[in-house]
Image (cartoon, rainbow, N blue to C red; front, side):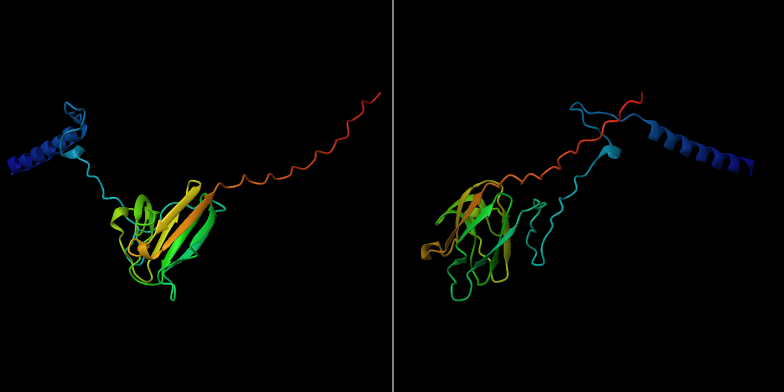
Length: 191
């Protein structure tokens, strides 16, 4: 009985010593400076993708204080081959929100029928493809540089479905008036 107890005690001590040794062991580095071993493996997490109720990429970022959102209708009833309004004047930091009111349209930056890749629906990628969206879709783009930005519908550019966003620089903030300091009485020395 004494040997069985001694054997179990020795086994526990050995396990604790192995755990202690493993926790104190130095991390081994490979020739290129990376850690090796199972304990040092790191798995890259997939990036988080935020989507809207339709599964489309949601606009990200924080809007600038004082920036505005301007709405453009894409193919509204009776004007299916137009952006309304077709021309907008905005400031740097403002966002344009296009909302589809009919099917099979795109917002593609560039001169009519020639994409320039600066922005495009649905998610600013594959602009040359002219991906079409349908009624209810919403696409937003925030303009960060002054300039004139032409855009068109990839399917209907031949019909004149074009628009332009004119982006002006933001005026400097209005300085706040500072109060005029009032003179303070100077104490007179006592004689």
